[in-house]
Structures are given as C-alpha cells and as structure tokens.
Length: 312
Image (cartoon, rainbow, N blue to C red; front, side):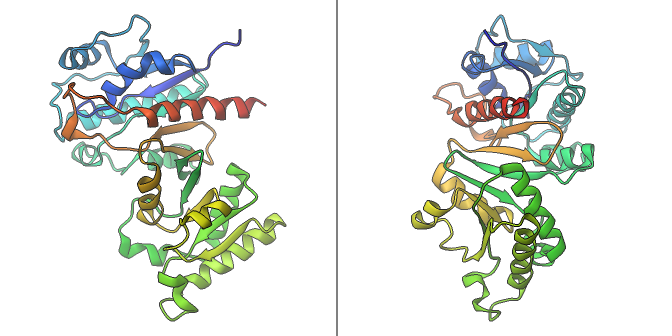
C-alpha cells in the first residue's frame, strides 16, 4: 500500500473557526494524507476544551512557540502573530522537503496588521519568501480564477495593468495550469466599447497577443466582457479565467461555488493550497451547529493531487 503524503497544516487564527475545522475533519483528511498540524500542545488543548472536543490520538503536531488566551471571535495581536508563525513554520517544513505540501486554514488580516506583520495574506508571504511571482488562483473542479492583482485598493488596479507585466503573468499562469483555453477578462464595462469607456483593454489585448505568440498557441481569449464572462454559456467554453482584480473574479466564483472552492498558490517551488473562506469570527467556538468543511477537504485533496502530479 502506497504511503500517504505528509502535509503540514497551518492552523490559522485560533480565535476563528480554523482549529474546529482541523479537529472535526481530521479523520476525513487522514484518508488522503498524514497531516502535521503547526500548533503547540497547550494551545491545542485550550482550543479543544473551549470546543468541548476530544483531540484524536493520531493528531500529530509540529510545535509552534507562543501561548495566549483564546478569545473567540476577536481580532487579536497575539492570535495574529501565532497564525503567522504557524504558517512560516509550515513553509520551512515544505522548503526543507520535510513535508510534501502545505494546507492553510484562515487567517485574519486585521489581526496580522495589529501584530505589525507587513503582509496582507498568505500569497504575499510566499512571494517574498521564495522571491517568485506567486499567482493566487481560486476555484473548484468546475471553475478556476487566477487573479492578476490581489489585495490592492481598487483605485490602483487600472495603473497596474501593463502589457509586459500582464504578458508574463499569462505565460506563467498557462505553464502552471496547462489549459488549452483560458478566458481573460477586460477591466471596463463592455470591455470599454472600443475605447469609449477606457483604454486599459489595449494593454490587455496586447498582453494576450504577446502570450499567445510566445506560446505559439491561441491559448488566451479576450478581453472578455466582464458581466457576461461567467454566464452559463461562457462557462461551457472556459474552465479557467484570468481576472484583473480580486472581486471581479471572486464575486462570481463565490456566488456559484462558495462552499467548495479552494485557494491554490501557483508558480512556486512548493505546493500550497488553502480554504477559500475567512475566520468566521461570528460563529467561532459556537459548537452548536454543523460546520461546513468541504473547502478544507477539497484543499487537502488538491494538495495530494498536485504532489502526485509533481512526482509523475
């Protein structure tokens, strides 16, 4: 019987729902991998006691320094710092090839900010750590969206759309997903109506042309009109899309597949997947309802799949 891959799980913000998901889904994900949770015994025991849950006997941990009082549903400097440390320990394990992949549970950006962490999310950390242009892609088996810009103010998006930068992004995206047909969204309504509503589409069109020429294939189509790109008819033609900004791609994705979507970091020397939801502070530690952890299960499955594909 083939040995299951060892996968590091960063536990996210302990004031949120991440640790409850980890405990409740442990038996399920253990069918696909051997999880190694980046937490310490004291914090794990405190969380389990608050949740009134038993810690599974085979719940293996990689100890992360730090102790604090868990305050369910609260933004906290100390919980932010711990979630960041859990993540960086997971990165180090993957970078040293002690684990095959990383799966991340949700962090809280405000808590990171309170802890004076300069990054706004996981992808930015990975980009800086490896010195690579990591790509944030979210989705599920029916639909994936790559984000050209991520956590930046909307007013900065238009200035970020440059021919050379977008060309490189498109080529890197193709080299990671290897899809023969990728839709690229315009920025402006009606794809600018030939320049009437903006000129960013000129840059997008040039980047599409450049990328297709470099790949010697007509992979990228567009610029697509954003308000019809995710219509049922359009989704029959495309499984992969490139969005110009965060909400342009993620609003339709989450409307369609919120409970099953995942986050995948592309263009890196390690494998990292994540849940596609937040810390849900409003329901944290209210262990009186059924928690949906389909996104977490899917993230683990995808990490295993990517690891197997890397070996083949």
